[in-house]
Length: 123
Image (tube, rainbow, N blue to C red; front, top):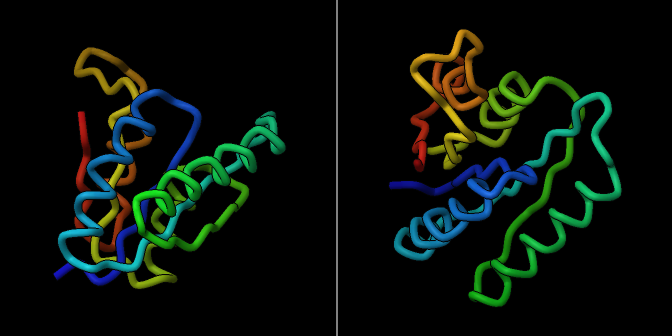
């Protein structure tokens, strides 16, 4: 059912907590896993690269190989574009502090609007 899972990752605690859900989904469905990190202006690029390698290592320890993509731009738009490019069946991501009272839309909420596939948002 989920041949390709896109897992956008950032330095938030929620992203690392969400990794367990992505891992379970990939293992249950024998899916291809693609890790994505979006570098926005002002981000620490070496730290982002290190985060991707740590995440890849964690998945490999669990017996799951993954592809890694790093792109520049606005996170929600890049996530949608990459999901389309790789023909993702689902995007798994954390909420990263989504609130109903906030005037500013979260990345997860924007991805839901833009994504070409279902989005599994993990609280």
